[in-house]
Length: 244
Image 1 (spheres, rainbow, N blue to C red):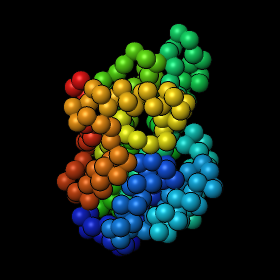
Image 2: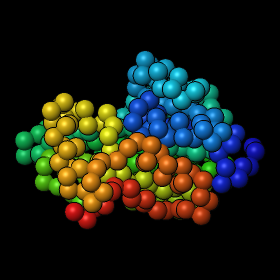
Image 3: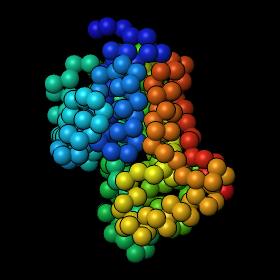
């Protein structure tokens, strides 16, 4: 196995779960621009094919983060994973008193269990200079009362998981990216009007005066991949949202 410099993505293999849209797609594009070979993983073939074209060439694989079998199948034909990035998972919001707890726990299954499945399947293929980036979120530090309690649980759980995995699999580095409000299809789950209202409200209160862009989060993820001394950390990129 070729040992690569952790400061370069040239000729590395980056696998991005959730790579067909939003932050995952932006990350794949940014990594490709730095010379990486890309595999994007998602649920929908058409979206994966369209994303691969916009990346400028990428391998594609279909998987559901809630399905261990489909995640394991992604790695059947992959021999090396220099960096694993997991940005997938949906939004499953709802106030506990008014919602089916099983539906809300889909958030935990996709984010925490899905991350566990992906790491377990990939870890034997990651070299000592490799890394893993998991997806957290602002709710871990600033929960709200608008039906996001289980989402906050998933975000906080990801942080604890990453730190433990970094110790278990050292010297492979494991970090968390924790974005705030970002203009991605993730918020389509709230409906057109709900999405617009939610993001406009967020922009009004954020110190930067706007919500984030996927490419800004992707830049932060590339930093986590290429800085060989960054480990066991949560990198917040939320426009100051934790403090308002």
